[in-house]
Image 1 (spheres, rainbow, N blue to C red):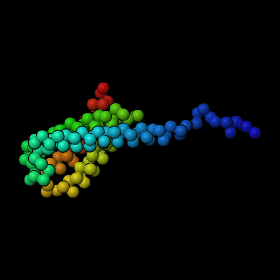
Image 2: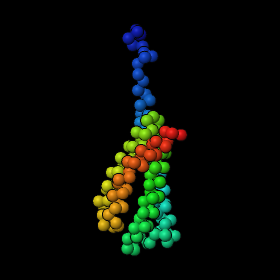
Image 3: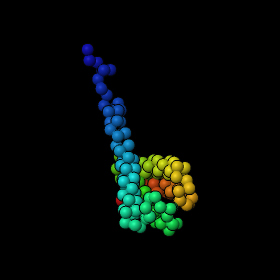
Length: 144
């Protein structure tokens, strides 16, 4: 028998959209991460193949070349966090900062793994810039 207690209430919260929201949130962060990784890797490859950067098995690059690499990584990081914020279903700055936190962790891991492969300032600069890049990308996305 159907009673008022067994009928669905229109005021009861619906949790059917929760998995979809989680996928959209995760997808937004992953899209930014993959974009940053793909564009950075492609740019690094072009720089090595074109002779701007020395071959991979050569001695470490000069400080000027590391500064150049840092500069384009900074721009790509901001752009990736902007993309994440734009794709986020809600709270764009928060999603950008999550990506920045992931970038910070990856930068620290890279610094530990590659310590001594180049100047010490380079991996430290990458780690230090992760959260500011995320904030800037998220704020730019909120403004537009």
